[in-house]
Each structure stands twice: as C-alpha cells, then as structure tokens.
Image 1: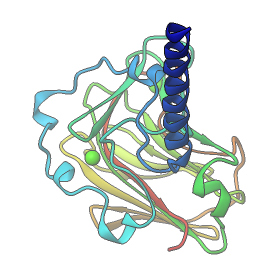
Image 2: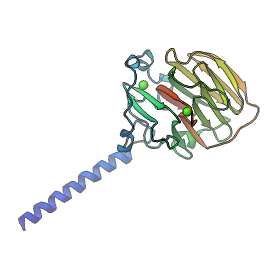
Image 3: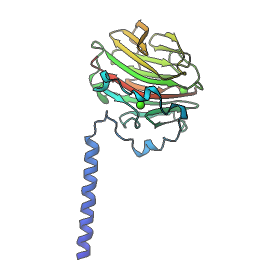
Image 4: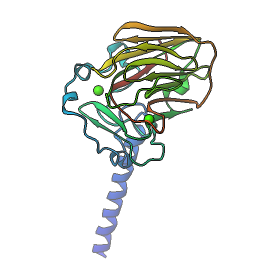
Length: 251
Ligand SMILES: [Ca+2]
Ligand SMILES: [Ca+2]
C-alpha cells in the first residue's frame, strides 16, 4: 500500500511538471524566439562556412527602431508559426549557427511561411498605413541567378491588398512581382541590409541605407496570403545566409 502511494505521488508529480511545461510553452508569444520543436532540430544539419561566424551584421542585429516590433535574430530557428516547405524534396534544409540562419536548397526550395491569419503581420498589416520589412542577408555565390517573376531567394509580402515579391539573385535584386524592376548589385560579397518599405502602391527598396528601387506598382498582383522568406522556387539551386528578418506594421 505504501509502495502504491509512493507510485501515485510520483505520477502526480510528473503530471504537475508536464502541466507547468505546457503552460510555459503556451505563454510564449508565437512571434518571439521560441525554441524550435524536435522536428525542426532534425533539419539542422548544414554547417555554415567558417567565415560567416563573426560578421559585422551579426554583431549588429535587429536595428533599435525595429526592435519593439517583430524581429527574428536567428539565434534559434523561427518558431512553429513559421511553416517550412522544401518542395517535398526531403533534402533541402535550414539551420542556425552563431545567429545566422542558413537556408540550403541544393536542388529545389526551402522557405519559411507565415500563413494568414498567423502572426502580427496578418493581424495588423494595412496597405494604406504601410509597412516595412528589413533583413540582413547574404546570398551564396553557388546560387543559381534568377530575378524574373521570382528570385533565387525571396521575400513574399501579401498585405491583403498587394502581393509584393522581392527577389534576391547573385548579381541583382528586384521587385519580382507583380511588376519587374531590377537593381544590379553583388549580393554575395557580404551581408547587406535590405529594407523594403511599402505604402499604397509604392514600393521602395533600400540597400545598406541607400534607396535603390522606387516604384509604383501597376497592379495589385495576387497569390498566396503569406509573409515568407527563403527559396520558394523548385528546381533551382540556392544557398542563403540570414542574419535577421524583421517587420514593422506601424511605420
Ligand atoms: Ca543574427
Ligand atoms: Ca530554388
């Protein structure tokens, strides 16, 4: 009887511990840096090159003006509200190391997707008020160049009025969609800070603080109701390094 009581007490203690753990998990804001789940850690096998371990960009993460908003510094993988998609290849993967997210898609794609209605973006983004997305990004030279209606890698921003896709190739960046506006530059030589500002139909892209694309969209486009980043194009090689990804729906 004594043994039984002891066993019962142990079971109760374990249940209490589990309850506490799950409470802690649900209290975590899905937009903060929630540690990745077990399934995520299974994709963390790619090692980044040694030379990106201590970049200037990684020492200067999310800028102060964006800090109070939504920022992923990639000290860990994005939380599970960001779904991943590898085009079903089972080969492409992402990992974090030293504050850098490496997205490796050797033959198809790998992207992080925030689907409607998840996250602050979908709750609050407003095309008339405008929005800002900023990312510290370096494209690997092994990446297959592309900046037509998609990029080798991309940021896809559906603000529920416009769908804007910003493409990052090796030798240029672009508004890939719904119009195509390009700016030639080397995206592989170092980390660059890309800041996309949009309000109404105007889209501006700053690189390291300099305005490089300033365009008024000719139409709204249309497509998946998502915010995403990474390589969303199957059949093409890409490797990219992300120091941070942040957005502001109250610019
Ligand atoms: Ca970082
Ligand atoms: Ca691809």
